[in-house]
Amino acid sequence: MRRRSQTMLFAFLRTAPDELRANTIYISTDHAVAMHLCCCGCGTEVVTPLSPSDWKLIFDGESVSLYPSIGNFNFKCQSHYWIRNNRVLWVGRWSATKSVKERAGEFNERAPVGKGEATVPTGRAPWWRRLLQPRDVQRFGDPMACGR
Image (tube, rainbow, N blue to C red):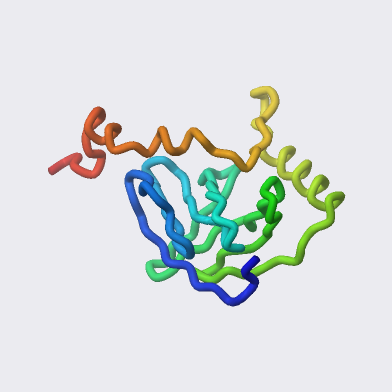
């Protein structure tokens, strides 16, 4: 596992690339998702949905930050880190008890008011590849071309 100082690159895209590169965050505002390979070097794809109840992306014109931290507790590596101003800031490994408590708190924060139970994120995101396909631009038109 990598624990050295890391700098992340970022790319704003409409569709997911065929292959994710290490140390790069791919961001689609059209689909409200950010994705990258796990920063520990294990090669697992990490998908962070962007919404008021999930992760928030901050872009200051030069760098990106994600809030809250990235806790890959369902992955074999169980890595945990922040991405702040294009830098990876490592967090110490959590115990199984702390991980369960934090995820339970996260579940309660994400539960929609008056709309039943929320789903707990699993760390797997097979749906995002389907959403970010080039055929969507062909079918629905280029959203950036409006008004041109």
